[in-house]
Length: 385
Image 1 (spheres, rainbow, N blue to C red):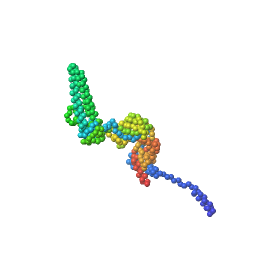
Image 2: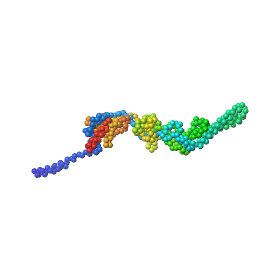
Image 3: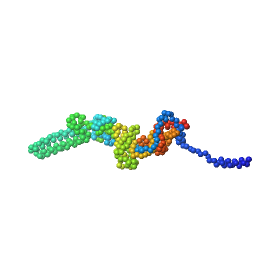
Image 4: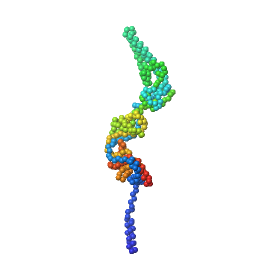
């Protein structure tokens, strides 16, 4: 008996040593927590929460291919006016102020100027000389026809009349270049007050005074920048596209401008740069945007979207995806209940988002009530801890 036990003991030791160890499976902590909480039996929904849940079948849908790019809002340069003085003088009255809305022709500023006084005086004297020499020439012409005066006298009076007329025309053009209208020049001929001798700067276009750098009593020189008037009822939106993308579009194509917190704005593609940017190798494009409602503010950043045809892709409503502990996914309904499934998504279009990985055709995803399921999932996860 002792011999039998001694012989059996080595055999048992060999068999024990030959048995393989029990395998150990490690699960990443984040995935383990999501898998544990997303078990159908772990989700506890109230009846009211269950009623809020709506689902949609995953299937291929024909959606527009959309290209997006960052953009910026700029003033339409045809709607911007830099207002400066064309004469030296001193500000005697300020009519327009920062933020005022003005019409074309509205007075902005009155400048008292010795130079203007001199020109007005020269204009008035030259006009008198024109009238006098014109009357003298007409009389001489009549006398010449009656052979009372010589041809030489007629030619001299005609030359004096034409000379005075040229001088008057030159002075008139100087005053008109300062902004005086023909109506105002006519008023100067009949006015004997100093009001007509002030240089009035007027708004060159309708809009809002966006800059003012002048105050009452200030001295100004020729070319000094005094006001800026802008009309923001129409603005430009610029964006840059890679060359291969820009070549797919043409002037007249429609795009969408998206500004944060505001409704999308449809606009026409009005300009495609003929030359690429050397640094970025991109093409600048421009949209002309109707901004009569004032939704866009010059110098703000926006998003630009252009549609590039249509294609059939696997898609779900944009309300379906959510984040759970940093993982993007959707809740899928099956015969056991609801489970959280991580997904990889592509581009959005028309309220749908492309599904690249994680779902197949026929899956039933939750599109309403996602918050209730997410809340239940997180609560169960915390309870499990």
